[in-house]
Length: 164
Image 1: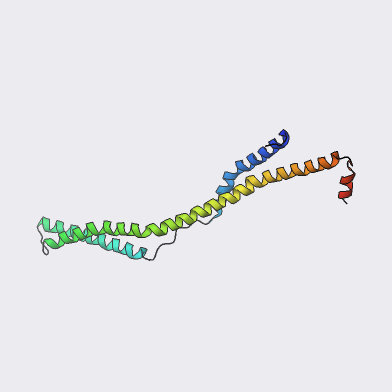
Image 2: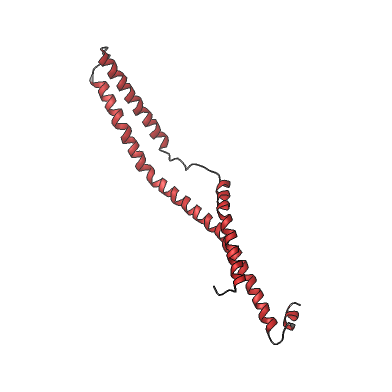
């Protein structure tokens, strides 16, 4: 605001040129980064093994119950039902516990990634848009200062002495 129209247009064009290339620069910067998974917590393997044991317990109970229902009783009737129930209830309970346990580290990882992305966007926005605008404004200030010196009563003599 307050700039002569040609300079205002030059500043707008510098900002638009930078803004047009900003999405591509962001994509390139994100593409250059190694994509990795968040670090797995130490309990992850134990929880996976627990899920596998509970699934095997459930399947064993189901197969045993089918064997009992067909008429080939291997052992009591309550044990297969107990195995099936433990596997059916324990699996979702273990998954629920894992979800609660993973919530804190997941939020921390998400906050760190959000901070990193915001910083990257700010750096690229500054480099792609704000620096070209500042350069145009600096050129305007230099031209204006030289015009003031040239328009002064001494004329261009101050320019020739200051250049030495």
